[in-house]
Length: 267
Image 1: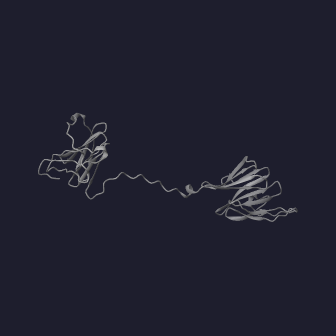
Image 2 (image 1 turned 60 degrees about the vertical axis):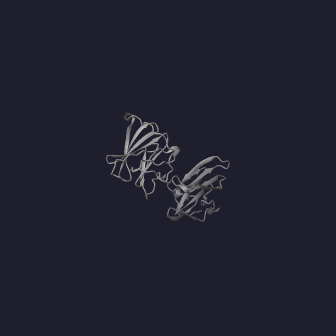
């Protein structure tokens, strides 16, 4: 900025949201911006009384000078541009219009809300802060719930559900009346002599149905609804154990297989 003479400047408000450059006398510090069309010239009007100006804040500009912002009234702000003790210009934003000025590569904008932005030639114009992108959904959130229904040997219905909150089985009558729900926190329930149980097999979970009232016949399902194992008690009372995973190992399930130990039926 020049220092050989007192700087006298005048500013023009940007009308209807478009930026208008400051028009200044010959030899003054701020100059019209060639990149922004000038607003139509208007006759100057007396400024408000000094007592009407309420100080808001001081903003340091990109070249080290400052802008002192004052509020005059609703949607009416002024910013005095100062280099040390020298007043370079006054930007006026009134009626929702921004005010724009430039000097020796410095660009200053007084926004209708009283905020001030500035930048130097060759630098990017300040942009609004980007809205933070939402965090990617976790695998648990992305997974959708899937289910399959099976008709059990007791005539009841089991709905095997696999979803973000884990696996569960919803038991109901053939007419749709709910009976119970089991999951890995409450893995077993008995009803009318029948036992329904979830058993963890490594990374897999199996659904076991045991007919305790009828002697111990057992059925084992995976969560695709497939019958993968079956245990049948023969008339003599001697059955062939079927291996079912229990925890990290394997054991047998039968009529008394709730403990998942190897069964041996004696006549």
